[in-house]
Image (cartoon, helix red, strand yellow):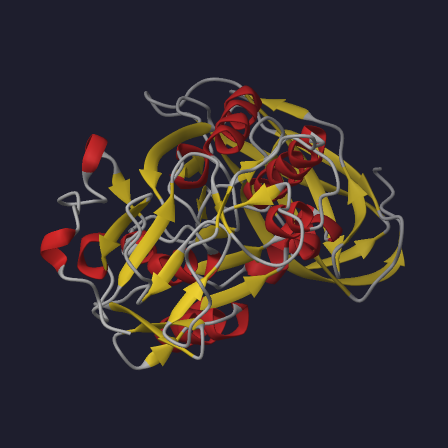
Length: 404
């Protein structure tokens, strides 16, 4: 099938450059080039704009410094295109074969699923990259998570919970998505508490929620074809001209490949077998296209005293003391509350009471709950959870200190 005479079609100019909003293109490349490493990057599927706004509000209430940048998804607003757009690349090519859309980065690298995205990032970032699942982060304690991410510049988390939940949605239950936003909030909070100062949340597209009893009007004219991938909210490749659709040439939406992407207006859908689902994306509505990138940072405490700790090379008694020495400077003289913690293989085996430090040195008293060969002693700011000092020590119990 040939593309209709372009003079008969009305294409908006610079389709993705309206309203002064940025697009997803190469967003991850810009993030990777940031200097504030290590950092975590969450690649979340289908985080609609207002969901990201809820997430931003929750993070601000928690005390984090948050920047939200509104932007537009790539078109069609589907995972295959959106996630590929996020990845570092110089060109994005769309080719439709046997009725299926295929996306290529730099003309040769096909990006069709999560595994290929992970492989590409691994090739570009090498040993500096660690990939995790959301549930991995929720399952691990902050101390064990800190150990796991230590030494990596980039911790990338890919998640499809929202898209999967929506795909199998039988009725509109907004609390489902609120629960998933809360899950994201907990993950970000845990990453900060594990020592990451910067966490960036990106996404690929939004979605439509159709009320259960709403009757969706269907456009029947577009038929399945070898050179056209047709879904409910878009047809891409070489669809026949239909004046009821809004159409773009590939180069207007940042794609190479010489085809056309056509979209129904409003809540209209293209005909496909089966019932129209409640959860839809791929089209050009604001709900499907308006998204945001969020940057969450821990607030840097300025003005608190610095703390030194006299930590021995070896612990020889089950009950022992750690001497904490505050260091006052003109720009750091406020009281700091700290505690001393002892970890072994991710398990906390001792913890002191909180101790206020300003001018005088104080001793933290600890009692080991378990006797293990080695452990890590950490001095932690109680308010910010920042680890001020840590040291690995040997444990060799020979008795109890008389003075304690």
